Image (cartoon, rainbow, N blue to C red):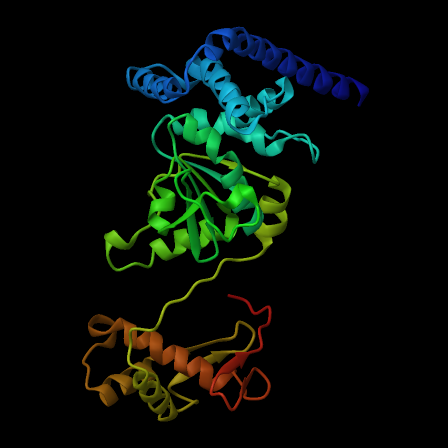
Length: 344
């Protein structure tokens, strides 16, 4: 056991040593970066993008990009990321978990990694735990990203914003929220850095898969890079809550009444079989022939397989669900279903 812990600690120390060497490379670039004018930051971003297009890897640009972010943070929000924050950003860039305590600057630590990966032009996401943090952090970190020649957006429930220094919200009481201009959801995803909560990203994905026209899709379609804040909460605690979405039924409601009436004409002894244990009901051969005769269809499985599905669903509802036990009909004409751990 002690040997295993020794190897683990030794491995961790090697990783820290490697990160420190990279931070030293970043620090050596600071004097040259400090000589840049504000207008030069966007030009450096354009230069990085061009180098990537010519085959340079992100890791080859990392020291310069991180040094540029460090200076941009100092000039815009008056905070120079500490070495440990730069190390955290490098860890996030490598797709690993970086643990930082409250007050150690997690919000700022994510910016170098987000900026570096946004250089690929495919957008990056910052997944956080609530609407307030999504808006606050986008407005707070927005000036840094803006100086670097990129855009920052925030998505909360039914609202989206873009950091725009030319816009001022007179109603905002928090200075970090004053320059968040309302935009569409699609525009929010087109930003280089998009802040939002995990459920909004998830529901937007589901909604995009339900649209009838590709022009209604809001997400980019490629999922390039994301930093997950409070990863234990998002990927463990919140992951236990399912994301369920629905759309209005496109079929006529009266069809379900017709299926219910058809089921009433079937004989329990000859036309269908019920499995109480598996909670299933299905038509027998005799029942299929009877349904085909009633509907005037020669072969229901070839002509209209969807009808078979609806009939068996109506059959299951009629034979396996009991009113006041499995469901309750109230005066508002809605149905509440009592769920159980039934086998699929």
